Image (tube, rainbow, N blue to C red):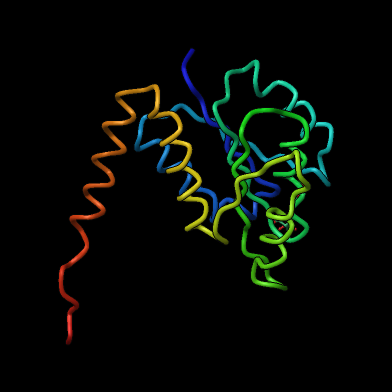
Length: 161
Ligand SMILES: Nc1c(C(=O)O)ncn1[C@@H]1O[C@H](COP(=O)(O)O)[C@@H](O)[C@H]1O
């Protein structure tokens, strides 16, 4: 079965943060879908998404949310598909609220929690790619190449100017 990744976010306003995850999956040739799903505003959509995630072949769900970020945890409560949580930077508390909401899951309902903001979204996509690379040689080769290019782009000495 082709492995697909779901990218979900609580609001359209999360897209500027989450779009880097979609761009990276695109770059690695990993099939993905992008949806707005909110535990608070669209609870029925959340349940339907989580309940069908495994049977639709999702390898992982990258879930970004800000503030009272219940989305990743509620997804994890309803599916065994691994959930990678991205705390979106909030206006009031700079994303610390999002981070703590996502990371403090009760024992038994795991959510992989990433850094606040676009760096976290990028790492969630890289993590999903690494998971898929375990059984997909083409993705493994692209991920290795991406990592090598990242290393090559780092200068050995600082520009002291
Ligand atoms: N944290 C959640 C959830 C959820 O966890 O289900 N649904 C929306 N939101 C968040 O509310 C913030 C503000 O949303 P608006 O910009 O739409 O007011 C967003 O960062 C979103 O992720």
